[in-house]
Length: 92
Image (cartoon, rainbow, N blue to C red; front, side):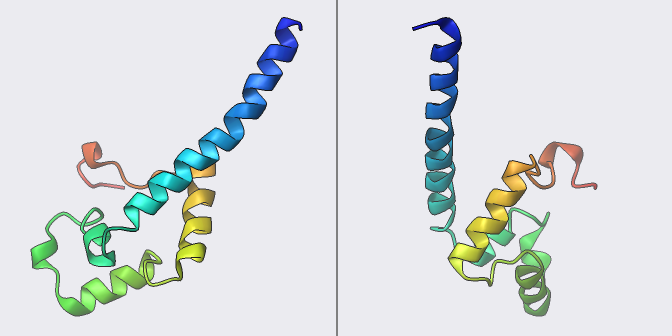
């Protein structure tokens, strides 16, 4: 077996392993309630009013069925869109 074949086999095996790891990560995130996941997006969750929380849950798609959330999340990960950075000070 040549080096090229070894590299190709490793890449082919890496694809299902990466998808599996992403699926496990998404499943762990689903253990959090939508409000808890939303608190990752906002600076001061206790300052939010209930109507604002409901609109933000809808805006971020946290009220969608889990398979729809997974496809949306996976499509963002595929294009390396990981959301807002906390180190940027919350600015976009």
